[in-house]
Amino acid sequence: MSEQPGQGAGGTGTPGRPDLPERGDSQDRPGFASQPSEQPGKDPGKGESADRTGIRSLWLGGGALMISLLGFFPAGILLGIPALVVGFKARKAARRQQTQAPGAVAGIALGSAGLAVSAIFVAGFALVWPQWQNYQECRSAANTHTDTNACVDTFIHAVEDKFGQPRGTYDGLGKYLKG
Image (cartoon, rainbow, N blue to C red; front, side, top):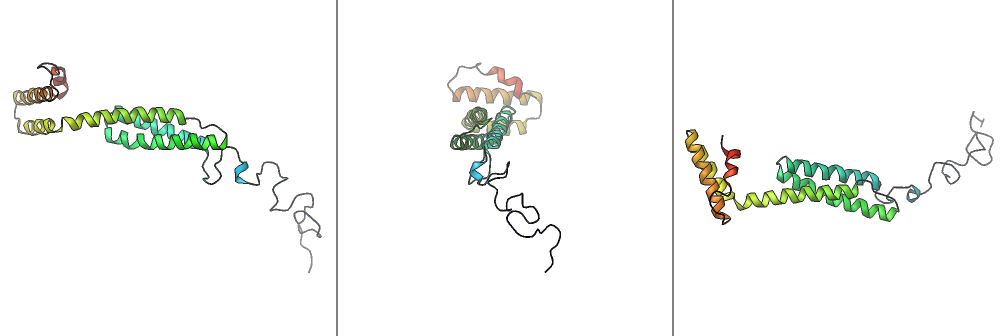
């Protein structure tokens, strides 16, 4: 059989290039790691770097807080929990890899804040749900602004009674409910 260009005449090394190591042998090649565990920032069985996971936690936590502050409280809970989970996993992976997880601590803090804000508002809203339902029914039956204002006053007084507050404590809320 005749030799084709680039196949070399035998010997060690890559065919046609005896100065290079064999293709499967990456120990002597700069820039190539022979084991996945030698790559900095990589988790050997997961394939995801701790720094990317930390940044993901930061985005989730920031989203949880922003969405909570904008009033979408259930979505704040749904983003806050993954922010905490991903942040703690990033910190654990970084400790195992002896590297850093940028954004993980901030993601945990923002996710916790978003989760707390959402949980407080969801719990508060759950406490006044019966009063809110009565307010909605009254409001849908109201035909005039006077009727609407009466519904608002009834709702505010019902909430004050629910929490044992004296009349007039929550009168400032009326400006948000009156249309």
